[in-house]
Amino acid sequence: MEAPQYVAARVQRALAEDDRSHELGIRVDVRGDQLFLRGQVSGEEHRRQMEQVAKEAAPGLHVHNELQVMRVREPGEDEHLD
Image 1 (tube, rainbow, N blue to C red):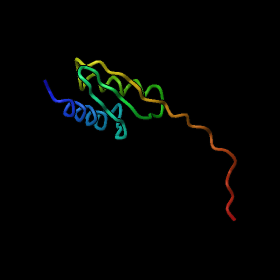
Image 2: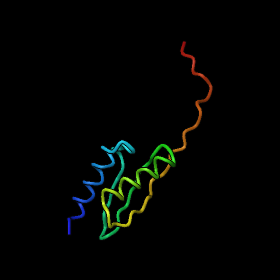
Image 3: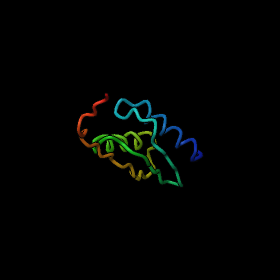
Image 4: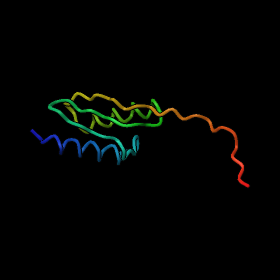
């Protein structure tokens, strides 16, 4: 069986290089047959794509998608500098 740190590194590399994700700031933890994704992403669709990439990079592991979607608000009033 492959060491957990190698599986986590492989998944992190896949998340960084895959066209569907291109994410560097996601934490990947592997415990036994469980893989946990933690961090923040920009939208629900991106969250789902990250999970799919992780499942493909680590087949046979149960992926727990704990990624949180950031809420981006519209900018407020314009700032005027004097």
